[in-house]
Image: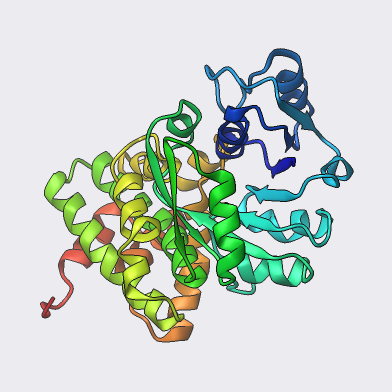
Length: 323
């Protein structure tokens, strides 16, 4: 058996390292030729996951055709590119989607995009509180594996489980995906609070009220409340809103310090998915009649449309209401 990982950023590389920990052959597809050369030549990915020696059983490639002999594909491409990448993948191979976001223009979740791009391929979703460098180092991690086909989900869970990597099975694919997408936007808000020096009280308020927004939107889209309160929702939210290791939190921190969103995004090699998800999420929430004031505030800051002080004042001036 050979697993393939499509996308050699930090998370994709960490997943390849996880799968190769027992000596399993893993093929890693990378967009950048320098990543392919580094992984194959010196067993490392200094561009996205520096300081982590990679298993020699990981073979990198820049050709999607080389993924044809894989019996499982983990897809870790940026959310807005997932459709085009999945369309190039071998047909009929189970796809374990590890990207978090909502597609611009369609408001579709990643599983819905993948089903359109590869209708012959079984789909599952992997989502939860995971910093790539910790997974790559073998530190304890728990995560949600969501799949509507329970038998397939059980096979995939057994395939990726490791002593320090524990997948919890769910059949609520929508809930797992919404938790992963929305938490990225809320992490930007918490980063803003950090950068602006608003204190830990404010961060706790944003996490809890943001979770209320996530729950309202998730329920409107057909998610289950217990999924949103689990690893792929609340668990991921707490992790991502608490550390500059989160790309979304660090983006928000820059916004809170007064830097322009355009400058922050232009100077990043890695993708802060929340910046692309925020306007799509806002539009989807409006269409569903769901109020998401924290998401609205993040959108205003990302568009450089409203001064930070005005955004903060607007949130604090909202009418008092029951919790």
